[in-house]
Length: 239
Image (tube, rainbow, N blue to C red; front, top):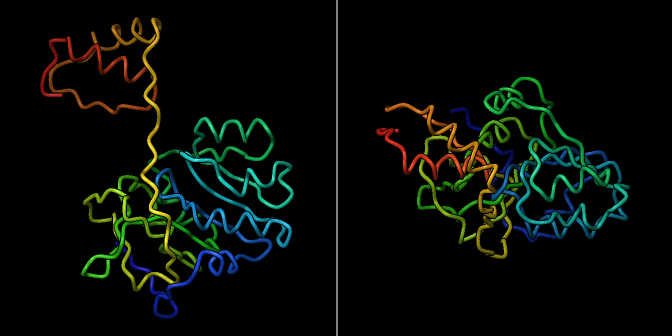
């Protein structure tokens, strides 16, 4: 695991001061799902009239993004999204967001080799532990790769973000430029819609093909939920 070295000791600042680090033309990355910032996002939205040509990268927004809601005509903020949530899809339909086609397993390599160093990475994390580490919680995807080459790293602290173990699920304080206090909102959850009759019918067909000892990747939505429900009643074991 490569470590980024911050230019100076991490400084504790306000959300408004952190948003003040953003300059026109910058690329800002909010990360994925539960790691996306809320307090910083609200502070940055207030600067809409002061800025121009801000590109925002993110993935699966679980809450409305203040910068997008404040800028319905995408005059200042334009979103490039790696995977749409329902909210993201509505912003795409409105012309505020574009889809950034990716192969999920290759995204760390994109950041390390092909994407220019990001101007600012801003992520929500757990509070710092006794070893100077900030935990990324349950969305440990490609955030380590984002951090390694970022020009600036800002963390928004949330005491209610669940702690999750993993060798690449930490950011050390020596890699961080600025730290801001979050609002300690509870972590958002994706809704769990009940399967439709079609979901159940297809799920039954899929479950019938699963053999003992199979390794399954389960996605998000009614269909994978239906498959898992059918598997509870199947004879397949050791999955």
